[in-house]
Image (tube, rainbow, N blue to C red; front, side, top):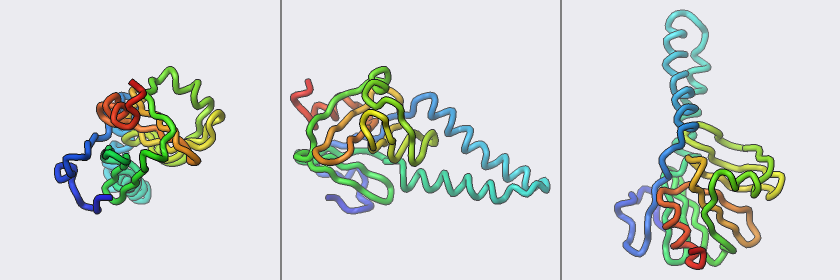
Length: 178
């Protein structure tokens, strides 16, 4: 795989890069509310309220989510898909995939059933694991609530992703899905 610190613009031409999709409105609202707490806590703390700990927790949550949980994008190569974060990468071989398809929001409930999030939920999207009543554990890295890519893997938990241009990602990963 590529090393840490390689920008998307330096990727070999045999690879296609896709940024994380723009956020859905619900994630924009939650993100603005959470980030808005930081200056509020600081202002109130400067006014004498003991909220420095709250400000530190909000700041640490935002920084940790941005660098460790929220992927910046996805790289599709001839033999793999790679999820790219600012501080890490996860490469999955295409040979480990059993199916790839586009999933819209209304269909998600029938696939997942009841879903409980473990990880980040709302701040820039939903990132981490979902426990679902129908599928068990699902790895989830989404910034939208529609146009999602559902990836089934042999012997591993499924993936739910939200790359820009999800139809192209599906086509590149699973040509028979067209």
